[in-house]
Image (cartoon, rainbow, N blue to C red; front, side, top):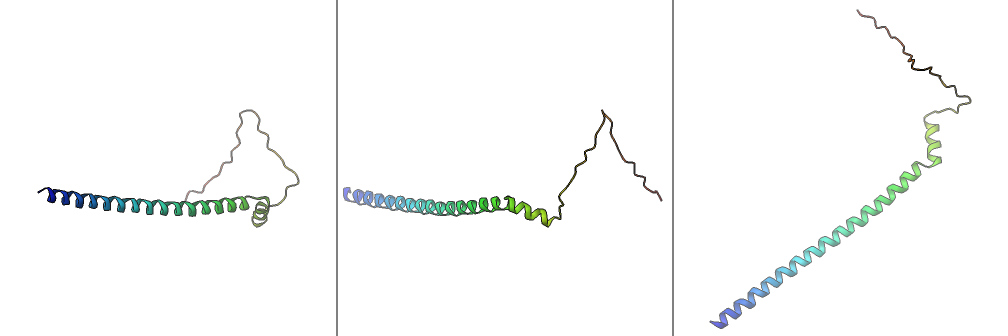
Length: 96
């Protein structure tokens, strides 16, 4: 009877050991997968930062200005608003 209980205990402990080793291996694999994804995302983030800086650089802005056909202004005229006056334009719509 003692032998049967001893053999059962050894088999149970070996089974528990195998399950724990399998679980640890799966967790390590998941951790390495997440580390790889983190590395890829970090590289992509760096590339996006560089791209953003290049598109917002002075050369990029000058190119966009030329593409949008902006013109250099020579003289700026400001509209002066007196007190609380508001200017509006009345648009009449033909009702037919």
